[in-house]
Structures are given as structure tokens and as C-alpha cells.
Image (tube, rainbow, N blue to C red; front, side, top):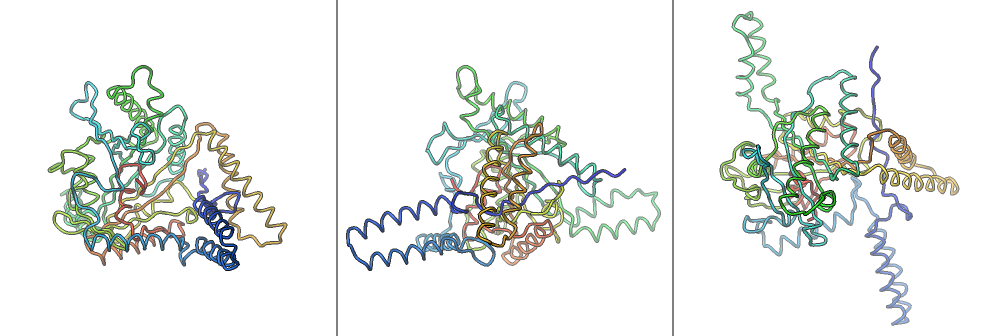
Length: 497
């Protein structure tokens, strides 16, 4: 009897939910501030021109703030990014966006790198990165991150039962980590995809042919190796765990000195690794400061090997590259040649609205041809069950009110609100199950090429692969690719510092 296909509904939340029909907090604050200034001006001048002019200016600004371009991006947001880019270019006079020195790039902000090794692990220290809370300017309310490498749970075609099992195990992994008792609020899973040199692949395939094999089979194997050599890729996967420092210290009994914090962090990472292993992902190694710095350097300059530690003493050495920012890319002056990078994100309204299985992202990971250097970063913000239930309930309430209001007005529905209601009901139903909690996923892709034209072609291939997986569009970080590189690094961070 064939196993039943297990599916997941990812889409449906196609707009921001609020009491004001998708109006953002920034738009509300801006409209409120403009209204106050306008009313004060009217009272002070008692002018009809000021009254009418304020009304027209307000309506025009509101319309522009809600306008979308041809691909669905915010027109005002794109204009803001372009204006900031042009201003920076004029201020720096064409100088690089970042030059290595005493400080790290602005988007990285202030971080502290620690190397901790408990008794018995002195030869394999773990890198603990302490990120400052840049909103409050406090280290105490910042967070810690640690990174480890894993072996994937399997490649190629898998039976339906194996796919369903893998998806269920990953569900339980996220649900368990989202527990309020575990001081972890985010898990990032990054897959680094690198083309394998054709000669190395042919050599590997040649070693698989035993001398006693028939001549026809040997010739067939050599021909097959020649055909596949140009599209063969290597996959490396890394997990980054984000730990809120305040949550961690609250769980420590007794004094919370540096040694005690490191011990507790080591224990938390060990628990995460145990759960990741139970989900089918075998631990390869925990990254120390030098290996983490080498990984960041490799993401800047793919010519430098992931395992090469020469010139790396601390994590900060990974940013030792001059960087230029352009509209559609960031250019890095690599050791041997320049590298061009571009970063894209799957926006909220572009996730697959139809049911998908647990391997729906394989189009971005394994089905990009020809072989393209890329990093697929999936970030999972973990939400405890009680909070996730409240969020889903409020969302369903907003959606229901919107549908009823549209029916009373006789408006024709586009189906977006109904799809969002389905997603909310699905979340509420799932939260009734054990070991299930809330998750806010974000998927980003960084593509790299040694030439601008090659990068442009790589972007087209990534767009095509995303569409094959059901993603309706990608949002490229145009005019800010340099800062967006951080989202593909093992920092569990966004663009803003």
C-alpha cells in the first residue's frame, strides 16, 4: 500500500494584517505626524490655500506610499533605497562602501567573539558570537550565536514515506526548539552549493570503475562522467543557533559570570545538536572561531576554500575584503579576482499558495542548471505555542471581518483573504497537536559569479528555479546588496544592525 502524500500549506498570508486593512506602522505614524503638522499650520495661518494644499499633499503622499511597481514591490521603498544609494555614491565619490580596518561593516555592528572549550574538548573550541542589541545599545539584551556543520538527510529521489518522515521529523525539531523552556529563538539552515571541477568529477567516477568491468561498460561510464561533469555540484550545510542572552541568563541559577554563560551556551548548543541529529541530520563538526571566519571569508571570496585557515586568526578576519555596492550587485575584491554577489528573498505574498511537500525547496538547492555558486538560507524564527495560537486567532479574526465586510459591500473577492483564513485555521488545528509550535520562516538566496554578465545569467536561473518550486517572485535587494550579504552569513541576522 502506497504511503499517503503529506502536504503543507505555506502561502495564504498575502498582506499585512491589521485593523486598518494592511496599513503598516510606519505609514500610520507618518500619516499621524503629517496630520498634526497640517492642522497646526491651518490654525496658525487660517489659510484656505494651506487647508486645500494639505489635503492634496496628504492624499498624494498616501497614494504613493501604497503604490506597487510592476513586480509587486513597494514603489516608495524602491525610491527610498535608490535615493540612499545615490546619496552614498555622491558622498563617497565612488569610493568603496567598505574598506577593512578597525571596525566591521555597519550592518554587522559590534560583536564579541569567544572561543569556549570545556574539559575534554580543548582541541575543538566552539565559537560563540555575542551580538550587541543595536536598538537599545546594550550588550545585556543582545543575543548569542553558534554554528555547526551537518550532513544532509539524503539526496536524490526518495519514496513518499521517506519524504513524509523527513518532513515530520523537521516539524518536531522546530516545535521542540520553540518551547518556552529552551532559550533558542531562531534556527538558520544554510546550504552552500559549489560546482565541482569537471576533471575532479571524472577522476572520481573513473575510480568507481573496477578493472574487471566489461569494456563497453567502462566506456559508457566514461561518457556518462563527461556528460555530467559540467553540472556536478557539492553541497555543504550549516546550522546557526540564535540564543537570547536575557533568556539564557534567566535560566542560570547562581552567579552569571562569563564562564557560567559559556557553559550554559555549550549545553544549549549540545541539546540543539542532539535534536538535529534525531531529525536525521548528522553532525560533522562545531565551528570554532577560525573555521567560522574561514566560512565567512569563503562566502565573500569563493576562490578561498571553506577549510583553508591561513590568514584567519579571528572571526573578524572573514570581512577582510574591500566592497563596492551597485544597483544589482555587490563587488568584492577577492584575492585572485573580483566576485559579484546578489541577494534575494522570498516575500510574504510570493510563497506557494498551493499545497507542497517537505522537499519543495529542492528546486533552489539541487535543480539550478548549469551549476551556479549559491547559498540558500532558511531562517526559522521560533514562536512558543501560546503566542503562536494568539497570533493565528487574531489573524483569523481580522480575515473573517474582512470577508464579511466585503460581502456587505458587494465586493468581488480576489481569493487572497480566503487563502489567508485557510492558513490561519490550519495553524490553529496544527497547534492542537503535541510538539508543534509557531515558526516564521524566511528564505534568502545569495548567488555569486566572477563576472557581472555571469551574475546576471545566474540571477535568471535562480528566478526560474524558484518559479518551478511554486514561488511567484523573488525580491532582490537592489541598491543594498552589500548590506544584504549579512543575511547569507552564519550570523542569524537581518540587514539592519
